[in-house]
Image (cartoon, rainbow, N blue to C red; front, side, top):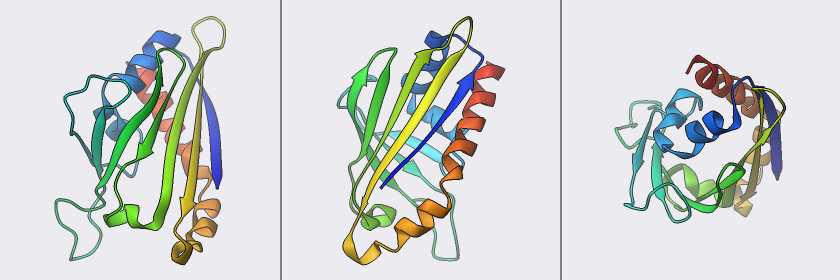
Length: 155
């Protein structure tokens, strides 16, 4: 399953790229599902860097590790795109056979940058019904890109 969205950001490409690629903790500023980020490798920004995201607790059984998912940067072309792949299989990651997000930036003239987010998911057979849920929520990626726009433009 593939979901995609794009957004124009009124900031130069280098500024947008730096925000997206230099520090995974910036996810907390624009991805509504991410409460915290922990970098889990000493690899600098680029291929091989790993990090965990933590979601917001839901219900009484949720703890500090609520919604933890681990990721690895698998592609990194400076000032163009990066791909982050799911690297864990526990917690919320148990639903996916594989999942990856590609963030791409393109100069759009003047001080504007086009940001494209493409999410590719493959569900485990018994959770295939979740594809319908994600499809119904496909506008969430565009909303999150709206938060990205606000965060980057605010500087």
